Length: 78
Image (cartoon, rainbow, N blue to C red):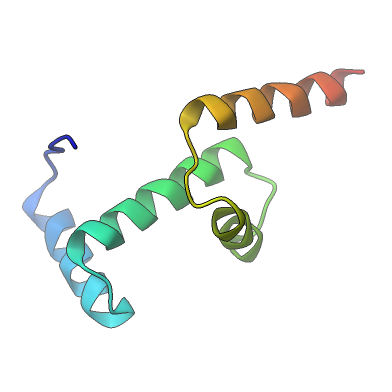
């Protein structure tokens, strides 16, 4: 586990969202990071589709995403 420095303002946003979503502050931050990472790799997907993708594979290592992204781009180029 690592330490990530974020602004006080963002921390307050995470705290507020975590209370509404019934998640811990760390779980809320982790969720947003994963959704954001997926959104960068799959900009064509809607939020609902990204959420489904996250639920299908909760552990989304960057290497796996990178490989999947590369395969998709290779297929698009063909």
